[in-house]
Length: 232
Ligand code: C5P
Picture 1: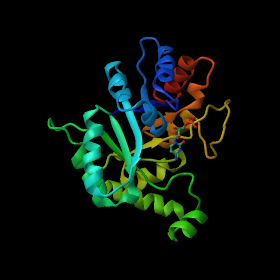
Picture 2: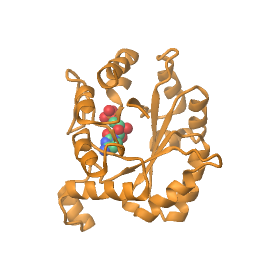
Picture 3: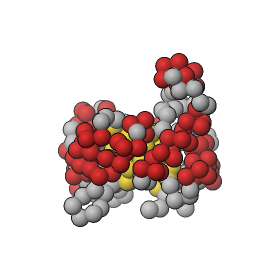
Picture 4: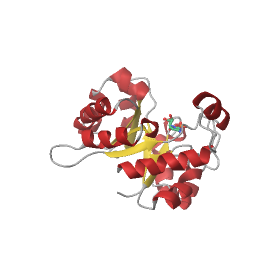
């Protein structure tokens, strides 16, 4: 599994998504479908994008009792997703159950990655709301390590955390990193950002890029620039 750029298709519906992807001609980028698009368009968006030749990361962040997660993951796997995720906070047992559910009768399965602490969670909120008193960077690494123990393939994290995750969990355990911006681009509402080139240097395995591509005047050119900076 090589390095790749995943485009975050944060659109409100299927038609907008297909219209956007038309701009890529015969290129079939790896795409991320989040909760908004999945809930609006329904599961058929996954099968349709797969039929068109895209790889699909389903960013649905499952978190429930192990039995429910096992059965739900089996459904997502059946749609043909290439990568799915869950909250590491659901515990090692839940993550193991997810892997069981994902494994298809032929032995293949989508890649499974974990969300550690959401980047929207501050140290203060984590301490006061969740009663977790450790430093947040330690909590992130602990959750990443739990994901590794459960047999997962990697974590979603900030590119700035990717190096530490690899130090703790090994270089084979991969990092999928949003918060990517071009050096000369708009930061928008992201706080801790890095360029595709820098993300490559730090050791991200996949970058998730939304608005720098989806809102670009020429999305294909922006995508190719990301590929050139990150993959080539
Ligand atoms: O448009 P932008 O490049 O900021 O999009 C980043 C994508 O990655 C969005 O779909 C966002 O929800 C997702 N994401 C993130 N930060 C996280 C986890 C997911 O930006 N910690």
